[in-house]
Length: 289
Image (cartoon, rainbow, N blue to C red; front, side):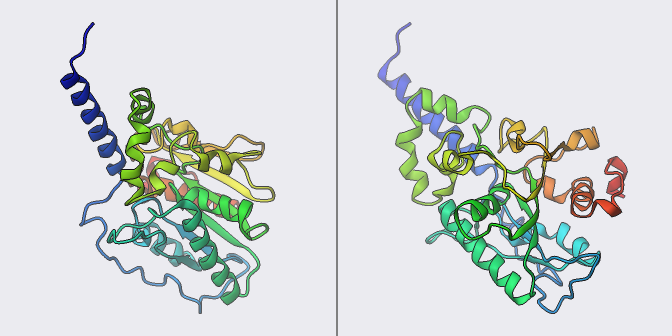
C-alpha cells in the first residue's frame, strides 16, 4: 500500500488534533469553573472532635479548582469534618485552570498548604481525599517531600495512580512518532499533562519501589466510564490492605465518568465509609437520595 506525503501529513495532523481533544476533555467549561463559594471551607476555628479527630484535605484534579468540591465539601462540613482545600498548580499566564503546572511543583504547593493546616489546627495527621491528579500528590508528598507520617487515610477518586493511555491515543501517537514532537506544545501551557502518560519519567519515579505509602490506610474508587484515566483499572493500587472499588459495583446504573464522579452521592457515601468505617452505611443506587 502506498501513501502520499499529503496523506501522511493529514494523518499526523488528525492524530495531534485527537490527542489534543482528549487532553482537553477534562477541561471544564466556563460555567463549570465559575467561582462557587463553599461555606465553612478552610475554617481554622473548626474544632476537631473524637468523632473527627483530624483535618480533612480535599485535593482537586487536573484543570480543575477547589470549587470542583462544591458538591462534596458542604456535606462533609455539615457532618462535622474540618475541611480544607485550595486551588493549586496554576501555570504562567493560563487563567482559571489549576493542576497544570509541573507535578513536582503541584505536590510541593499541596504539601505547603497541608503543613499549614496541620500547624494551625494543632494536628499531627490529616485525612486526604484526592481526585485524579490530586490522588497522587499525597503519595509524592510522603515519598519525596516531608509528608511521611502526616496522612492517616488517603482516598483516591479516579486517581491517576499509574498514568493514562487516554483510551490508547498516546500509544497510537507514539507509534506514529507524533507523541514526543508534540510535547513542547503541551509543556508550554500545561506541563503536568505529559507527566501523567503511562511510562513517563514522572510515573516511573512515583511508582518506583511500589505504588503504596507505608503506614497509610489507602482506598481507591474507579468508574468504568473514565475517559481520562485509562484503562480504568490503573486507578487501583496493588498491595495488601488497599481497598479498590468500582463505582458500578456499588450501583450498576451509575454513569459518572472522570469529572462527574466527584458530583456523585454514591461515590460520596463510599468515601464517607472509608473515612469512618464505624459509621458506614451501604453505598448503592439509593445513596443518591
